[in-house]
Amino acid sequence: MRRLLILGAGTAGTMLANILRRELSADWAITVVDKDNDHQYQPGYLFIPFGTYTPERVVKPRTRYLPKGVDFVQTGIRKVRAADNEVDLEDGRTLPYDWLLIATGTRPRPDLTPGMADGSLWYKKVFDFYTLEGSSKLHDALEAFEGGKILVQLTDMPIKCPVAPLEFVFLVEDYFRTRRIRHKVDITYVTPLDGAFTKPVASRELGNLMTDRSIRLASDFALEHIDNERQMIVSYDGRELPFDLLVTIPLNTGQQYVFDSGLGDENGFIPVDKQTLRSTQYDNIFVLGDASNIPTSKAGAVAHFGVETFVPNFLAAVEGKPMPNKFDGHANCFVESGRGQALLLDFNYDTQPLTGTFPLPGIGPMKLLGRSRINHMGKLAFEQLYWRMLLPGHKLPVPTLMSMAGKHEEN
Amino acid sequence: MPTNTLNERTFHVNDEGFFTNRDEWSEELGADLAALIDIEMDEEHWGPIRFMREDSAKSGVTPTLRRLQTVGGFDIKELYRLYPGKPAKKMAWIAGLPKPVGCV
Image (cartoon, rainbow over all chains, first blue to last red; front, side, top):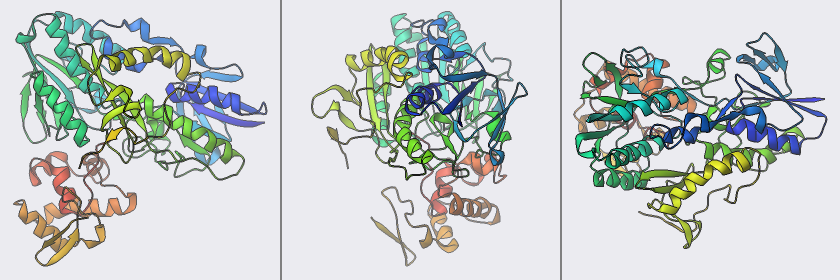
């Protein structure tokens, strides 16, 4: 009997369990470990503050999406002892493995910034929306908000879903417009980057959209601490911005057991070969989804394309054969822009998001980096695709590797 | 790939002026670059630059401010004092390393 152990039953872990159970023979035992039985549709967090989604809507039991023939162990992970091929669990058990797939993602760490989670304003005037609790409480705060300064503030990269803060700022602008108090609300997007986004073309397009919507941009702002008494955020170089409501995106790190196991870098992300996702330390460990240090977005789309590229590689690796595929860091994501519209970004390790059409060159129907209603509909439809197609490991009708067809390159 | 020449030393750079070949760098060149952005290099300034050169030689990537803090033991506030405004970018430029990547 060969033993495959998957840590984490989120997007990547659940897809892996489904696909590999079909691909591997019955002499493989597959075990999946996660600390709870709540699979959360994380893209849904974005809509909870505005009352578009309820918190209940985004949570379903993990076990419903794991296939027959896979053991689900519900407990936390204490330590991976990679030299011994064993994992210690919080319930006291130890699981041995022949092959280990790590898919435990990343997590927001408001505890790492002074005055954030430990401040008197936390969940009163300072909120995150990357957790179910934060986005739910932010909903109440937005409903009660009648005017003043709102800061949407990004602490540092990398974070989960790097476009979500931008989506939030566009949606919150639209929210107050719909409530007819937009003129009483002063919105500033605060980022440590030198523009709205990291990549130049997208940064320019999104920056222009902010200007059009009268959203201020405060760039190169690296948050040092939150001054709770004076209701201000303070940067390392001493700049201060006051707020009536702060929507913050905290630092992100990998899970505690990754630090404790000596597997991660300084942020708790596990170094891998970016094309094969194989651990640079241990040949029988692969890392899928947000838990690795690959230089692209920590997002479900990357997990999805990463898993598709990985499966044939893994089947070859367990047979001792060379791995056939190279992951290109492909991601595509919808960016909600308010007014019932969204933009679509498509990019990889080497190519920034460009303008053009997707998935059919010259035809679309989706417009890259342009706002459209159909992109917005695509974003909403993705929820059903996620539960019904993506998690069960069915192929979606989009290319796994990025294509340059239909894109406009700029000099 | 464009080249720059500074005080009779030629080196390859990208569109934004960051080095594309780390071996073309020297401390003398770093000091000359720093002078262009009004930074006079002293021992305090060289500490993080040397750490960045050594760290990136091993990892292949330019360390972030957070890595300078957690691995190198530097105080971020202090780095802002030494390299005002955009320390990560300025230090990478002076150290002859690629611009630090904030992942997408």
